Length: 151
Image (tube, rainbow, N blue to C red; front, side, top):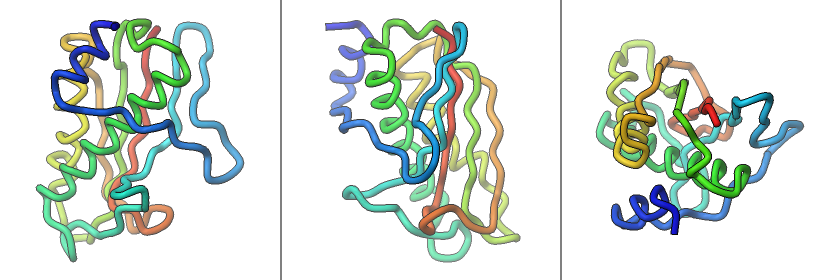
């Protein structure tokens, strides 16, 4: 078993089957030594995790949704690359948080994803990041995250 998959297992995480594109795009593209993952929306029980931060969802719940997305992103990387051990570094994570105009904790929501990437990939999981509040995300999802990795 790869050391990355071993860490995932030790955290009690079972990687789900990789997601599929919901429109005219692909889930992952590799060019040179860089992998770009399309945005993944938060899901709970296989369905979009719907909500708006600052309205009907709190920061801790948003953070849990971002963590769930990190697991889905890792499943996509595993499927695309065949082995997570090929990853040299998580380079960049960008998160969109479905939130009210008054909500200002998007960065804390995104910690759910970032912290898990640090736990799984160690120093190679430390990445640059952006977090944005947006008026809406496809299917009403609470969070969407995309990722760039070096292989």
